[in-house]
Length: 222
Image (cartoon, rainbow, N blue to C red; front, side):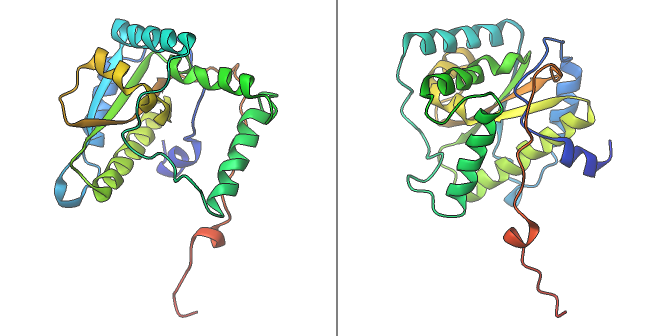
């Protein structure tokens, strides 16, 4: 797959089939993604690739917590600033309107929004998932490195005909994830990533992007 096609076809898929994702494919993707850039080659990512019964168990435990109305775990990092300023506030709002509008859910229907969001903890039906951790002693530059790594993983998955969805939502149940994966002390769960073959029967609306002149300034003397 051409790299431009990989970039433009990558999106957050929220509906997967149960078709098996071979371990060899995941190993190939992750070993190649290890070439992602990181400052001073720190390679700050700690990744767990989860399939089969362990993933089933994790989904089960998360679902039980959700059904019981358990509160989310104490946040280990700030996902969004408490008060988003413009234009980020408007972009986030537009995303929510598109996402839930496509499902026929109004802004006022909080219960329906929560039901839709609950699919996160079933990995949207995906048969494979990654959970990405970072050492809590590392700083913003290393978090940036993690973002580049995850983007590389997602583009390589497209080259294999697979889709993905990164999910900070899993950080809200980081204790449950840790109960199943047993990561070393000192790591923070940044996000999960659902991986699989897209369920073409699930409708979606592609989220747009800001115009280039809104995010890029050319300084070239012309």
